[in-house]
Amino acid sequence: MTETPPSLPRLTADDADAISALARVVWQATYPPMISQAQIDAMLADRYAPERIREQLDDPRHAWRGARQEHALIGFAHALLDETGCKLDKLYVHPDRHRRGIGAALLREILAWARARQARRIWLQVNRGNAQAIRAYEKYGFRIVDSRVFEIGGGFVMDDHVMERLL
Image 1 (cartoon, rainbow, N blue to C red):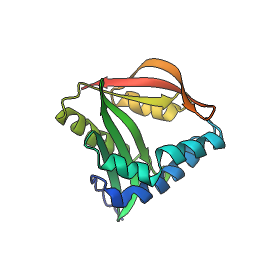
Image 2 (tube, rainbow, N blue to C red):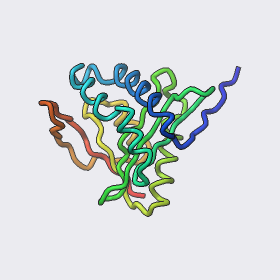
Image 3 (cartoon, rainbow, N blue to C red):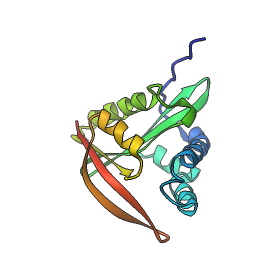
């Protein structure tokens, strides 16, 4: 049986709880070898609180796109315009759906959104230990331009590469 391709809708406030739940699944599958459970919990509580997501969904400087298959949210991307261009802040696909082109499709949606707003650059931060994500971003034209440790509060840091792609 052939799998139905995902739809890629703009996400709405009604999706905030599903985004938060999917983020938890993805983070628990991805980040325990890289950061502590306490940091995972703190970052999920901060970055993926449904109220915070709803605020961003209402802000025209933010883009939230989802990937749905059979009505279930299986991936999402979030970007925001800043003074240097566009930051790809989040791009996650359910671990059971990797390697099916879903992340690439979400990235194309964000790139189109950024270009439509005359951004000349898209950039992101990725954990230095996340080799799979780094390889994927390099495949799509991003390159490492910096490596830094970012303090994020609560005694936690993000040890990241900064990657960019010109648009």
